[in-house]
Image (cartoon, rainbow over all chains, first blue to last red):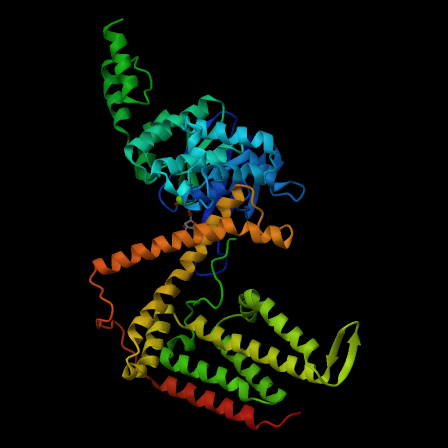
Length: 280
Length: 265
Ligand SMILES: Nc1ncnc2c1ncn2[C@@H]1O[C@H](COP(=O)(O)OP(=O)(O)O)[C@@H](O)[C@H]1O
Ligand SMILES: [Mg+2]
């Protein structure tokens, strides 16, 4: 379990660039949760997730992983980074290896994984990200399509088998097809019991993947709760400037005639509710 | 890594030195740096040191900022000084195993250290009080007489300004890639020299690739907005020499003369 207690982060203190990126943030992320982090550009989302594996140290407050302060001297930071895997924005820009295999094996090797287990870890990570054939491992990572690159980059973190997988805007710059696949595989990770934290600007994705939403505004936490409650908080939605997904709008309209309609995440869920109702 | 500033980055203060004409500053700093090599006395260097400290304070920078900005070249500085100290032939004053310190070595090492330090101090003042745009505009103007020999001064100035413009971008990108690879278990600055060298490949390769991509995009974007190599462009800022510039020119000449005349103590 990951916990932040009254965390503050300030960039460039005592210069004219100084900015309070995070102000008094406290939160808990439990096992098997899938959490979406939303907020305007510059609201502190990327800063927040970098706290999770000690890439940034809080200026005030503490970060606990399984009740241990990750920034204390006794902690082996590599162990923390193995448990909390972060996929950065545009992760394919960090490729450097000759083959997809080496690229994906890089993390686990650094973490000291032994040769026999390594191969297995790499191929199962690739498989989880939707590469059913093992041939892909011999290709150059630079020769892949945009969507494939992104999935290889995510596989390179999954290969370390982190307890918590953190993704910074994983769908940014992807085409429709790529997005759809990615959503499918991320949802699969959740089903397999991995804790997922992801940053997004897309409310449809949020609705489809997340159970819980954390909203940031100017470095402050302004919402932390269930997705359905998030979209019914009109004032908040306006404040952080987002659109309510049409699925939620349609469902809310339908609720007036069908008060028993459940919370729906996709158009499919609405249609299957209606089908059930009319053709029981 | 929560700091964004690095070597002598423009500090956006309202100091007097920011108001000087960039051309004057460039020429003055360049002349005093060349001049450093003609000063032959310790007291001359002391005078210049005092002068540089005066300028640093006038630039509203802290001496500690200067030293912090020197950190990247500290190794080079130390190496040069130690090399001079131990490997200059002459009268031996102290020896330890195969290392010998000679009086000539001490003399040379002191001078080199002084020169390098003063060189960094003066250039620090220049870069801390002049924005990149002013620097390149000033530089372009200073080298413009070279046009007579068909030297492409405008293009060179533009190249330099683009390069400087991308220094902070590359710096930020390097930090970003470093963080990403750190998340994959790389520990930069740890392990043996060989291990360290190897840990830099996952940083350097993506950095280079992204830089090439960016350069491509920039070239296309510039052409799309009508840029043609070698064609004249209109200037947006005009530079003018003011009284305060004359004052500083006078001050610099005074200090230079004094540091040559002052007798050794
Ligand atoms: N490396 C950095 N140095 C200085 N300021 C930064 C740095 N990274 C982010 N910031 C500032 O911190 C704030 C939060 O940024 P960030 O966490 O990247 O927001 P988001 O990911 O929500 O867009 C912004 O005001 C940004 O300018
Ligand atoms: Mg961000």
